[in-house]
Length: 50
Image 1: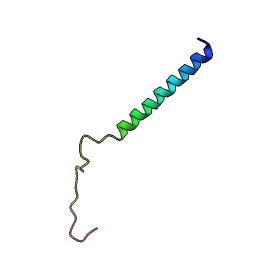
Image 2: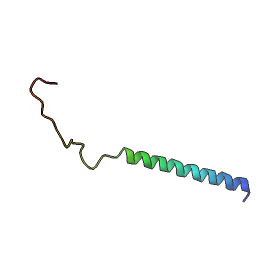
Image 3: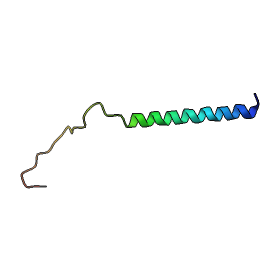
Image 4: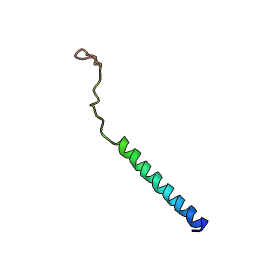
């Protein structure tokens, strides 16, 4: 196998690995959280105050 072919295959494999990792990261970022996002502290306001 020539060095040029080996280098091209290495670059193609690295690119495929990078694309797969990027899709994996995006999938993890878009996953729904395990718990609902509810506040731990709530402040009650009087009727007309804002």
